[in-house]
Length: 366
Ligand code: NAD
Image (cartoon, rainbow, N blue to C red; front, side, top):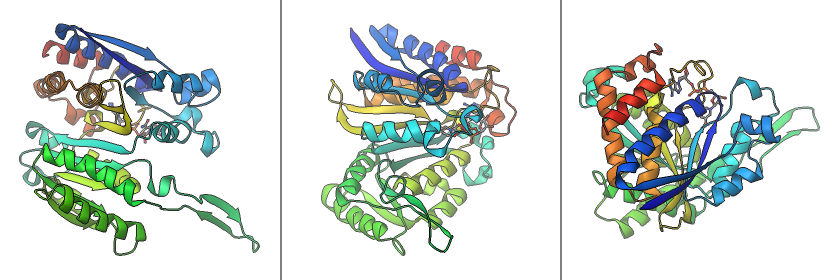
């Protein structure tokens, strides 16, 4: 008997809807192995502003600190859009929680099943076998966090805003380690994306990537690409990549592009892994869908729960070492989606999924 202790932070709008059914699927997948789910729910984002006055209350952080992993929904939406930028749910909760737990590595699988290629905006002949790539994004450094960061009214009345992009060699090396582990489990190819023709941080990034991979994983094939070219290549031929490793802002943009070429935001999961280890010696991590809170469809029971369910599978794999059960869930999602051929509906804006029915279809296939 094993007990999985994790924090559940459903968040706002569709967050709680997809979280509820993801927990049902998780329970159905783990129960046969005698595994008990010991999770504690906490407020984060807009709901936390409403109930506690802040987007990331100390009580929520404490619940996360006491857990071995965090299963996260998504946060934000129109109700809180008029707050000052610093108080908005994403900025006031998501960035601080990443920083607090040192969640420096974001892994986003970009997966589109072969049978569902028409859900992608790319022509089927460009992706005849679907898409299967991974983006490894550095998550706690770079321009989103670098100091100074300010907006100043100048003496002549003009306004100047400053963001600073900073990277240390050690920060680059630790994200490379994650990319190397991922590439070793896949085809052995890493593409490091930077802008080394204009940015100092990228010059360091490229040099560090070259030296680190040569020293620690010489069997891997490492290539480098400028981010503007990578954006074009993602839209032209995504499968030329296998594992992409890149800095925070480039990864933010490239991974969203990857999301749309894969057809549906409702299908894309992500894992953010920290430097800390949990009681099993596995990485402490935060697992969440790649999409947002979808306020336009919230409350209608039609949100696609797959990304949340697949995020729970990633939690089993990385933070609890339960790869077999993670694979079982992933296979069940694939079968359920294909039997109903439901992803295309979301990609093209016809929201015909029923959240509960989809989760039920997945549970039946476990
Ligand atoms: P969004 O991802 O919420 O929605 C974009 C489109 O995709 C919408 O049409 C939506 O209906 C659809 N969609 C997204 N997920 C879906 C799902 N599971 N099933 C079916 N359809 C789905 O992006 P947005 O509209 O730009 O943002 C809405 C809110 O979410 C904003 O407040 C934004 O700040 C927030 N947001 C939060 C996170 C996060 O918590 N990590 C990430 C992105 C956006």
